[in-house]
Image 1 (tube, rainbow, N blue to C red):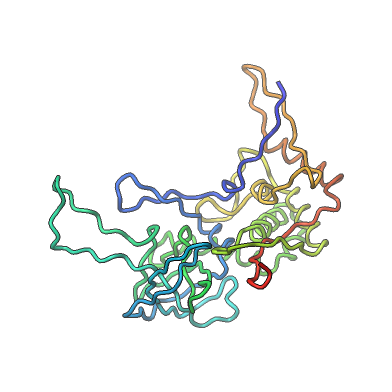
Image 2: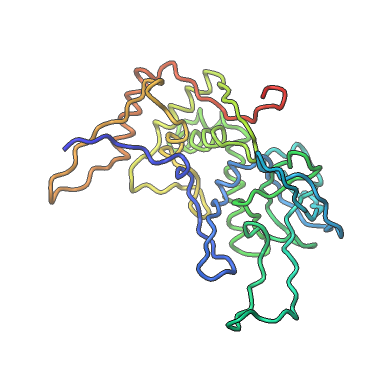
Length: 314
């Protein structure tokens, strides 16, 4: 039987980690560190030097929201700007403070005392002295950066945090000079670079009410697409960047392009194996179709970068 090979939903293209919260049975899906870097506006390494005593109230950053939110603002001395830092030496970072819990409150009926919440969406509380890797977005109206809910900071006081920092540094170096990787004589380097850059370009800016899709230079686009074609698309492949879940794969980046029939793309048909026969490697089938598309309808295709639409353009 023949069937169309259906790509996974774009939202599932970026791997996530299920992190337990304080609440029993509740899990929050945080992005792996490399994915946090690819979706962040700014990534810095720094030390929290002060935390404001009074909270500030500003409009909610979420598109369409009419309420206001209170933030506690921490001052972070930047020791290394990894992405989008523009030589920053200090940043103000707002976080949603956890609500106060009365330790003298009587337990509810049943004798179970509520577990103190960590803050909105499990957002961490920044404290003076912490050394962190921060994945930041500028608050749309506030004079500070904020922490996207699914991209908590890395704690450099832990061995795991130090290990994950190396993965973030590696992808930051790739994005700092993508042409070097895209023109490498090593196919795996070209593929790794192309996947990271495409995922960065195709990530929707945090808290953007509206977005535009802007075509990148044609030469760069061709290098990116050829780089993806050089990658390993097998269903059994695992990306090689260090750190949990590593970096994005070429196949994940392909899904991020969101090709349609208007682009000349038609999902390939595959033959289901007969009983007792090995399963078809759908990733390999998809890669073959992508390579043929590149040599045909995809010749004139240009990758588009997702950018926040400016207020005057809405």
